[in-house]
Length: 543
Figure 1 (cartoon, rainbow, N blue to C red):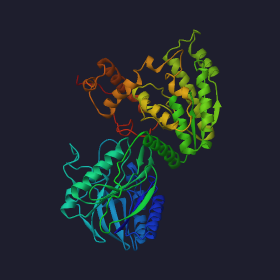
Figure 2: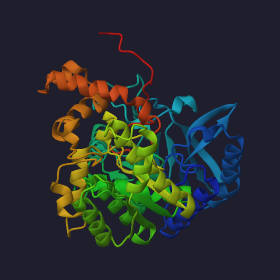
Figure 3: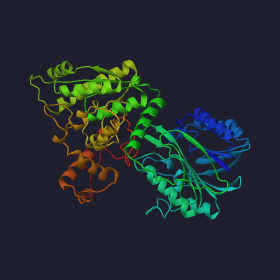
Figure 4: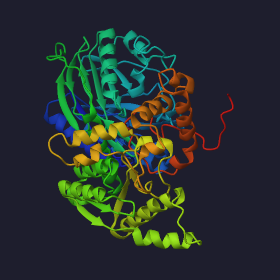
């Protein structure tokens, strides 16, 4: 059987637009003489559709498109796609197989993830049964994303009591097909490939895995679809962070010609952020990005990423020096803009800041305290939002994960914006990204990479005045936020217990700030926002 894989980038809710992509894939596969074309999970509505699944008009549109467009297009070719399906008042996340103008098989998703960024139990019911489907001489084991993530021999602690694969292979499946919407985080590609290879080897069965690609709000989907032979070797690997397609032939037996090892590095984080920015703008309708350029590492990296994602003509940087801004910082911001080829404006905030100080300090003597430091950030945020309102820009905020974790950011100031590109990127990784951006030529001025990080809101200020060194802070944050370790467990890794407890105290205290932050692109195993739902008002009552 000739099977076409169509790794597509759907837009959430755009049933008609996604259907056009699917029909294009069907036409292409037919031209390639494919017997079956496979699309990702929920490809007709995009993933995750969230509470759009409660909208009657969307579900009705899905039913109309399936009946009037997809079903007739299956003449002479099998079409396997993902869509929400209603039955007796219940909703299922389904894989639908059309052929010869008919729906010839439907397999609902069995394992509904309800952790981290997933919330499928809120919307769907689990499959009642699992059945192998005979098609073109193959016995297809149809699965949907999470259904293959529960092998008890691969995972030390499986999440579910049931393993759908055991059912399917008991029934004699000869080819496993998984349609997926598996979001990216660093390390996910390697983990996924290792797991799929294990399954193929365990059951001595070829495996076809088709994943969604694209950015949907905070989530980025990497694609990286795979075809594996019965020995677990990779026959074909789809592009990462881009749409892709291929045709494979199961005639005889699939065999990996050049077994490859899936590798990951800072390039994948870079590509994920580019795709996340690009799709966030494209799918929300914005065209132009605005970035406040301080001459620091974070704003430099954000401006560079925005430029590479959207084009230099669609990015504008704004330098807003105050009394405390160094001459070198403004020079570095100017040099960065020139290297990127973006528009650069300079709007000094000294006069505005002085006016505030006169009004807010009746004694006439500025206190140079935290309130005045944050006032500068809020003036800058107001300027950026003014330009955004007047000229139609989307402001990109520049706070990184380390700062957001510690509350080292200003509400209505540097947190202003419609998207925080670095919200899930620790400070140490920001420097890695900067070095990667400069891999071929100097884009971010070298001085930006070597000077001590500073908010420049008071004389001689350095981040390390109030934060541990980032080389110490970031591993503690990862242990607490991503690995969910206790203070005692983190200290046992070799960190000072007093420092650990203070870091954790500040992380917990800053939750109210993060709740008001712009959405951020997820690139680690645990991002702030939809995947980490902590209360704001709470007390640690177990000590």
